[in-house]
Amino acid sequence: MQSSVRQLTHQLFAHYFFLYYFCGRKMKDEDKKISQRSNLTRNNRVAFVCNDEETKMLNRFFDKYHIQNKSRWLRETIVTAVLKQMEKDYPTLFRENEMK
Image 1 (cartoon, helix red, strand yellow):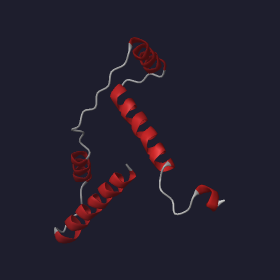
Image 2: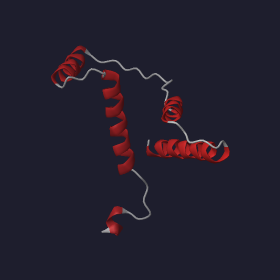
Image 3: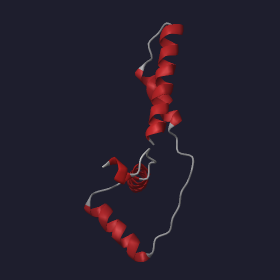
Image 4: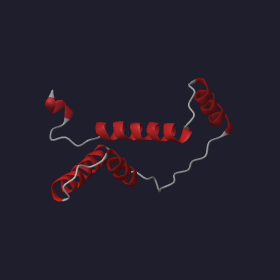
């Protein structure tokens, strides 16, 4: 996730640099928003199935914390858990006991 954000930032900077120096104009805020949106479109669908108890639990949680965009909440929660696990499993030069 962080590398994709870096790539997006690099692409936006390169685009801005090209427009500013070669086209002789500054990039408008509208241009930035359009280029960001086009790179972040979600085209891949992920589906999963819950049993009745899991569905009731999720719906109670969504109601209690006033979550209206359920798909965004699920996506952010899953991606956060994956990123934390990947960070924890990141290969290191030394074993953990050697670093202490």
